[in-house]
Amino acid sequence: MNITHDTTVAAIATNHPLATRVFARHKIDFCCGGKRPVAVICGEKDLDVDALIAEIEAELASAPNSPETWAEASSADLIAHILETYHVPLKEELPRLESMARKVHRVHGEKDPAMFDAMLDLFLGIKQEIDGHLVEEEEVLFPAMLGVAFDQAASPMSKIEAEHTALGDMLKALRKATGDFVVPDYACNTYRGLWVGLEQLESDLHEHIHLENNILHPRFAAK
Image (tube, rainbow, N blue to C red; front, side, top):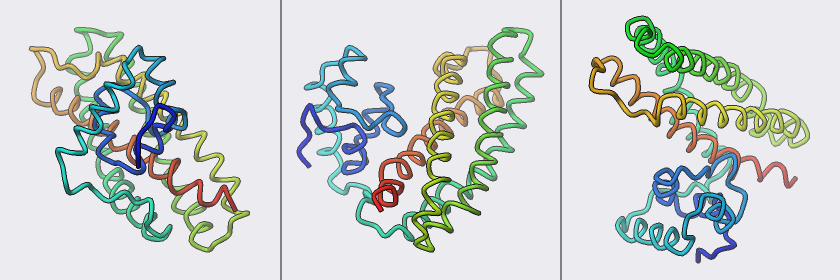
């Protein structure tokens, strides 16, 4: 796919998965807010669009074996990938991160009460949102899609996308509250591990939401 100023960020991420590395570097939302031309988003962030496109092309050229795009995969295969790659690990990772977040808040909270309170509150909100979200997808949305029940999929899909937007906003707030996950010198191993885990959670959720919002859901919205 030829990338132009008018190509949407979502389309670039869909056709060139490695481009998401570049978007992450520049904090460009390619999942919930990706359905806009790359030039528009670059304008909002005061980025040189031609330089960004060149950076994406360099990223693609550096890896001749590009990862699977999933754009051509069947809906059943894509859903299976989402469940295996994101849903199953989240059910293990979220409780682990909660335990670490509570410990870090308890041990280090007095050093910066506002920051640590915000971190814990935001993480717990994200976890609560995800816990309910996974159940709704697994018990309502995905079965409707796999059963080719397009009419039944439309309503929960709209709700799921609204939840994706809310999750995106909470992730942005968490990144801001933690100072872009920069670890201070005094941090213990649990503190460092938590910040790494939270940043990885953000990255995984961006990819997860992108696959649903920009590849899976449009197939059913068009029916």
